[in-house]
Image (tube, rainbow, N blue to C red):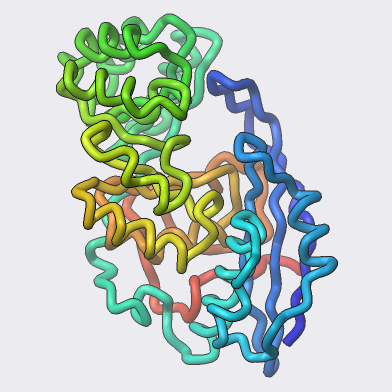
Length: 333
């Protein structure tokens, strides 16, 4: 078994702004597992917010010595691998196994592709209402939008969107508000039929999330507060749902643990993403039948991608019978 890594430099169609800054491109790590003439693709999307980087992942695999030469020994191969690197290796191993068996991962997990649901499409913070509405009109065909907020024009933003869009709206403040602000804003925004609000305040303050949840009707979903399954017990009674991202949890195997832990604790589950290619997005899509709120639109922000994968263009997540995670390379990376 051979493991190869390479950096994917991914320019974006346009700048994407959230409360923490503006992004014009993204870098991820492609992980390839080769054995028996089969190549499995995985992707790591290290997150600076969690103190991980592309350089860290590349350095880890430079020194990584697999404890087994058998790709099916996934527990052994993932032992001790940090989350960012584990995500890439985990997905590559699952993709390899699916290709070896000739089955898609959703089928190997016993899931129903008809239950994959629809993904939200995200709109970042824009410089003007006119530009915002231009983005909204371009996505008028999709059933769910996620709106990034946090600049002080929250009410005006959602009011303007509701003049041209009648689908479901989710909010994401990316830790940009205080607890008191959140309560005030969500009480005012409730009339616009908001489906949920994601991580309104800085992570690390579950008691403040509880304060919010007890005072508003819009469901609250933790993101930066819900990295791993082990984070979830501290959120009991504080939020309505938790956001799983394979990039932060460590791949498909960790994602399954996260989902089942969340269910056992009474949480709904969001399935999120980073700025990533169809490799990570398609891997996450395999778990979509298990969640309540898919949010895996990362590839739609990229100017180009070296892969084809899950179709999310209409919002509907279309899982195919292609083996593994269902991706194919457009060109050699």
